[in-house]
Structures are given as C-alpha cells and as structure tokens.
Image 1: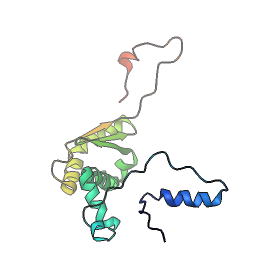
Image 2: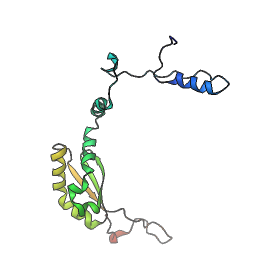
Image 3: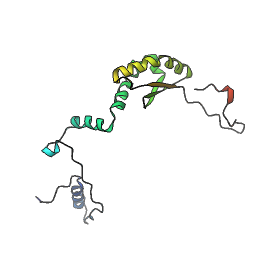
Image 4: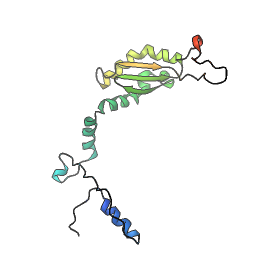
Length: 163
C-alpha cells in the first residue's frame, strides 16, 4: 500500500493501468485534475448518499421541479384531452407558463382551442395553481411556396389558409 493521497477523479489509476499495458511509460498529465466538491452532509461522515437522497435536492437547486411536473402530466396527454384529440395533436413545449401544442390540421387546432380552458384547469389542478397560464395551439407547418422562377416574393397573399 502506498501513502500517496487519493485521487478522486481516478486519473492516477487509469494512467497506471494503461502504463502497465504499454512498454513505454506515459507522461504526467499536463492539466491538474479538478478537486471534486463534497456534498454537504453524508460524505463528511464517511457515508455515501443514495441517488434517491441526492436527486430531489439537485432538482430543487436547479429549479427543475415545475418543468418535471409539467412533463409528467403531458406524458398523460390522452387523459388530458381525450383519445381522439390526442391522436391529432402533440404537446411541443412549455416555457414561462405557456404550453405550446401542435395540431395536425387547422380543424384540430380549432377543436383544441375550444377545450384549452379545461386542459389548463386540469393541469393546474395537478401541478399547482397558476403554473400553466396559457395554451397556444398551432396548426401544421405550412409548405414553402418560395421555389420556382415564378414564385411570389412576399408569400401567397390573400389565398393563404395555413395556420
């Protein structure tokens, strides 16, 4: 046993293994390994913390709890909007209290807009009041009309019926 200080990054052990596999010794690392930050409680007492103990604290410190709650509820999209509506729509993003939903046609977008208040109420009931403030429902991505030598520069004009 050597009395050398322990390297928590494992770099010394990895270098020793590789050096044993090759005939020429490896050079010393040019960058000094960073010292790992100790958790506040358990390691100081010589115990390891379980992931189940650390994860909730990390989620809270990073401010991910709202995002994770919303993502969990959107995993049950069919229960929120019904099987038929869920088959024709997909929740895309949640940012600053706004839920963005993509519908496969303008007809389905209109149908989802009519039930948006009920969906928002259900989400806030399970996640927390005021978490979701608005539901933006958008139609399908419109095709591009900007190709060919006779294309119109500023879009299609008054015939535009997308989104």
